[in-house]
Image (cartoon, rainbow, N blue to C red):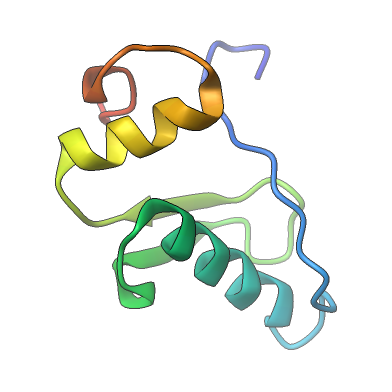
Length: 82
């Protein structure tokens, strides 16, 4: 984002009605990061295109998984909430 925050772009085929797209996004993120679906929670953006999600898990493992997408070789510290 323009304010320096890291973001991931994702697309799902589910319809954006009745929370189907949000559920599909959370399942996609959980599968990609190797965590249980219940470890991913929608924090903000229920009806918006930009969403904020909280993922529970070991910071170093999540950071390593996220680094694969960013193309950077940095560790979990880049992705930890400050």
